[in-house]
Amino acid sequence: MTQLTEKKCVPCEGGVPALSRAECEALMPQLAHGWTLAPDARRIERAFGFKDFYRTMSFVNAVAHVASIEDHHPDLEVGYDYCRVRYSTHAISGLSENDFICAAKIDRIDR
Image 1 (cartoon, rainbow, N blue to C red):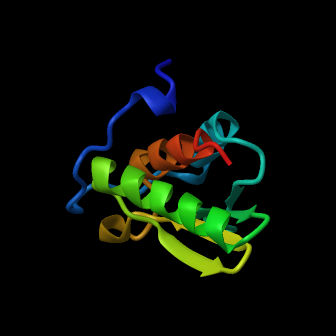
Image 2 (spheres, one colour):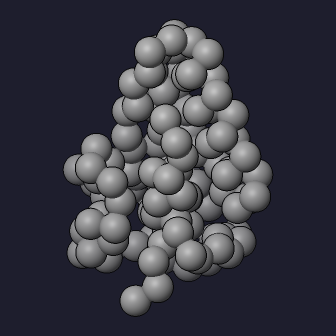
């Protein structure tokens, strides 16, 4: 099996089914501890904590860089010392492999 961090996102314009709960649960172990699968299996999310605003914003900028490279963008909630990252593929109203690829790449960002 290819590691998620070695994969590249593919454009998703809809027309394909979202991953099933079972498919999502099979991918979850490839993510770092802290990611949660929503009860409806339509999104994954994780909260990150930081010592100060500078470190928070450095992380947010790194997440933005990953999103730009992969052309797949999360929803972010940002405060002084935290960032919550949520992934869902809006075109299919659920999760795609792209969400897991980006989450795995974010896990590798040095904090």
